[in-house]
Each structure stands twice: as C-alpha cells, then as structure tokens.
Length: 69
Picture 1 (cartoon, rainbow, N blue to C red):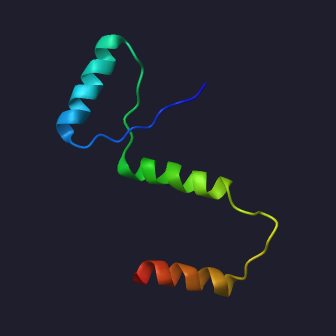
Picture 2: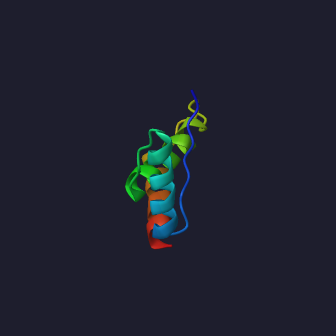
Picture 3: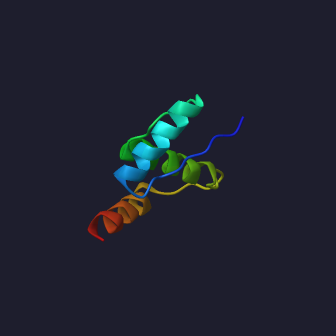
C-alpha cells in the first residue's frame, strides 16, 4: 500500500490535520525533521548508480564542499 508524507505549513495546520485524521479514525505517524530528512536521503540513495566506484578522496571533497556551503 502507498503512503503519503505531507509537511504542514504551520503548527496550526499540523494540529488541524492531526485532529481531523484522529476524528476520521485514520492512522498517522508524525515524523520529526530528522526522520523526514532520513526519508529524503533514502530516496536519493535508491536512485544512485551502484555500479561505479568512487574514491575516498572524491567523497571527502564532496562532503567538505557541502559542509562549507
């Protein structure tokens, strides 16, 4: 079965939606920011080319450029 991930624009919208889902008897699981980032990272990792090898030096360069930006 498919799932839906929706990020409310405000705390008021979050409370409204959780109350509505609860009243409708729909199961839901709120996610933390960290869990949401983990889902995004997982989706990115699924789409990578696993046949190529990358050196440690290239990985460290990419990590450093990401941290410094």
